[in-house]
Image: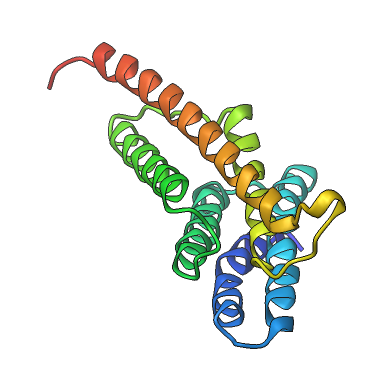
Length: 187
């Protein structure tokens, strides 16, 4: 069973394939099935790390794959939702830019044996992105709540808030990276 945490991480990455197919399938129920798969994939984000720590089965592979799986799931879904018109482009670009920037910074620093640890705020950022996307998956045809506010409207607001949190965490990683690079001895 020690393989299960890594298997869950890999499954989270693969989940984007049926989600993508369902988002573009012209049947209203397809969006709801995509939402169920997405929520299950998001649960694996918590579950894989929890199981690995509980079973003392943390691995280098797991630490490498976990953030990649998050970025593949969230990034691909953002691109698809912008493509379907269900997510606004500006916050989408901010989120994707931040993810690429931080990945590049981490890769550069890793080459110098410097690790930028994941912060608690960055974990909240990932959760905020996933919650916002869950509200956006049903699309504009999603349920309407009290006072004529739809889940789609809530998703739009949450997506902008997730983008703001994403920019904030990107800025903190950038500042920390520049400090670390400034302290590096020249080759």
